[in-house]
Image 1 (spheres, helix red, strand yellow):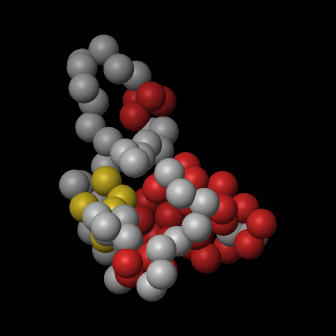
Image 2: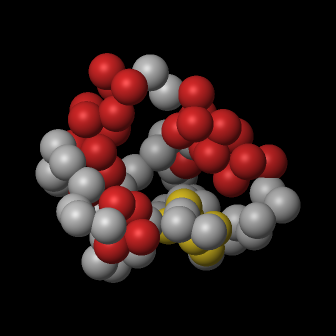
Length: 80
């Protein structure tokens, strides 16, 4: 797989399956915006997703403090 489930997700996690479906069904016109958000670049490197370094992964976000609401924890985040 080109996108690795990690840190709380597995290949059978519902969130991981939803994320993959979201990517597959995403209109081509929206893909550059997603790539910019996820990687900081508007285009994939030669070789596509397989060539990303480090590889793309989907990680479950854990609360940083006990006073964070569950709503805050459901937002996606990336590190570029």
